[in-house]
Every structure is written in structure tokens, then in C-alpha cells.
Length: 468
Image (cartoon, helix red, strand yellow):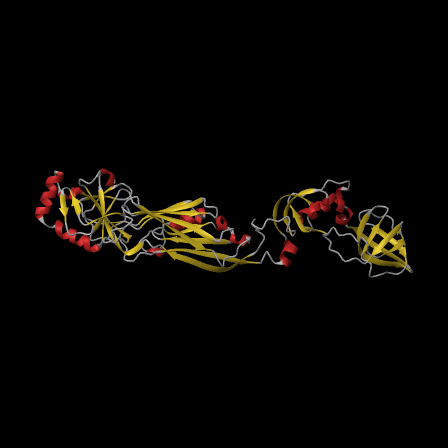
């Protein structure tokens, strides 16, 4: 039997064949007994240490030379092991397999998470923030009363006015006058303060001298019951007045087109004024260059809604809060959840946390309850969060701020990494369409081969091999 001997540089887990390579052909005999899969052959001649590979044309099989042994003067034995990947290369590459990883750029999906990458405890931290222009430390007071205003200007049966601190002081002094209180009492048929449905402080700036105010119609007085208070600068809120403000947080400087931006390797914490910090899924913005946030404020109640959108504009997460601080003017008041709450015992403008309004927050906002930690740790990120300041704060935190924690890993885009480990594919692929490193999941070859050969091939398929 003739055997072709090669000096051939290749990997054990490669389908490469020595096609076109130089070889030396020798007449050989089998050492008895021997194996077709791992044969031992004998030739006349001394050991040639350069030979490491051979091909037996009669069987159409390729072999690695594992060892060469001189058994007698001028006789050498070559111990061989079948290279099943080269022998069955055609069957392998013509098969379709579920490929988990590949170094072929035409196959892998850059946005799929590769859990094989070893993560470091070192993180790269980036932050971007913008301020909400509507928020103000000075704020304003929203007074809701009963009077004879046109119904279309009302909120329910109440009429709301926005006053700055100076106007609120003038009104307070006027209400001390017994004659005024008696007049209001006669109009409402009872306690004069029952004509005042509520008074809250909200961190929204209102210029009561601006006739073009977007909050409502500019007025110079307030009517409670049928009593008109002149000399006040206030703005009547025409119905339920809301305003919105858009914020775009740029993701410049953060790695894009890299699965490490997606979880679990990268996490994001978004601080929203009044809500606190919420965790956001960075995979929602894997292709985005900015995060789109819309803040909607309801002036009369202090309620705020934040809407987070993906790069295509779809709503993916919301958070809400209430900025209002209850102020003790009326005997009874109604909080932002619709619950009647006694104002007795409340001092100044600072209010206690009202029942049912304690939400999520962190120490970053001081007035918020830091009850979010357990929730966020358990659920990673929630679709909707709600916060409540519960009382007037001395300084409003105005910034919408995104902090991104990116765990350092091996660079999966490096040429050497991709060549040796590949990148995630996660789909069925015809193997003749790809080259380089390949690792299948549940790979199994159907071929006219022995059981031991198929077992070897399947082992290579599922543990990684090279199509060359």
C-alpha cells in the first residue's frame, strides 16, 4: 500500500487538508495487528523527523503521525491517528448546524451577549446630565378655592391660582381680617376656610407679572367665595394645565456596536428629579446615540410624569412623582392621591409624608424614601416607578442624570479574540458558507463513518474547531 508523507503545519481541531503540498510517497506494510482508525505502518528506511502527516489514498483518509520508532536496521514504524476533521471535511462543511459562535463576520451577531467573556471588577463610569428648566427652588403656591368663576376655567368645582411668595404673604395677611372671614363664611354657608379646597407649594417658577404666561390667564386679584382680594398678582389656571419638556441625554463616549453595552455587562442608573434613581436597561439603547426623556408637569397638583423612549420613539419605561408640599391653610385638604387629609398639627410649609404616597427614591434627593433598593435588586429594572417628596425641600435637585457603569472585559472586537473565540451567532448555518473558528450547540454529523469517527467529529463540532 502506498502512503503519502507530508511536512504539514496544521491544528488538530482543523479541517485543513494538505492539498497541493509536497509529499513523499512510500510503499508501506501494516504492523499486525493494526487499526484502520489508528494504524501503525512500516517502511524501509530511517526515521524522517520532518514527517508529521500522511494520507492513505486507498482509504481516502488523513492521519497525524503520533510517533516514529526504529524497530530494526533500516525499518521504521510510524504510529498514526486519524484526522477525522480532514477526512470528513466535505461531509462536515456541507452540513447545516446550529452555530453558537463563529469568527466569520458574515455569520455572527454583534448584538448578542457573549457570556464567555470574563468580566473584571473594574468599571468605567460615565455620566451625562441636563437640567429641567421648569424646576425652581423658589417655586410657587397653588391655591384652589370655590368661587363663581366660569365653569370652563375650573378643575372640578375648584378654581386654582398660582401665586409667588410675596402674593401669598399678602393673601395671608388679608385672611386674618375677621370681617373678610365673616364675608366668606356667609357666601359658603359655613366655615370660611371650607371655601379653600387646598394650598400646595410646587417647585415651578411662575412670573405673575407675565401676561403671556403659559400656565393660564394673567389676573390681578383672587376671588374666594364672593370676596375679591385686590392688590394681588396671581395667575388663574385655566382648567388642568400641563407643560412638557424634552430632554435628550447624549451617549457620546459610551461604546456602541458592542454587546458589552448590553446587560449583564453594562448597567445604567437614571436620576429623575422627584423620583430618585432608577435602573434602566442599557440593552434598550444598544444602538442609540441618546436617551429621549419627556417630562410632563401638572401645575395644579405638582404631579410629574417621565416618559423614556427607545431610538424609534416607542415608550419603554415611565416614572412618576409628586413635587407638591401641602400647606396648612384650610382645615381639610386633599392630597395628590385624592385622599382627604387633616391639616391639623402641620407646621409651616413643611409636610409629613402622606399616606399612600411613599414611593421609590434614594439618598440623592434627601426628601425621598430609599425603598427602591430591594425592588431594583430583585427586578433589575421596573417598567414604572413613582416617587413623592412629601414636603417642601429647601433646594430642588433639577438635573436629569444618567450614570453608566461599564464592566471592563476582553475586547471582543479584537482580531485575535475573534479568531480564537468567535462571536455569538445563535442560528442554523450551512457550514460551507463560513470559515474560521466555529462552535456548534448540539452539533451532530450524518456521514458514512464509523461510530468512533462520528463521536470524534461531534466532539469537535460542539467544543470548537476551525473550518479551513
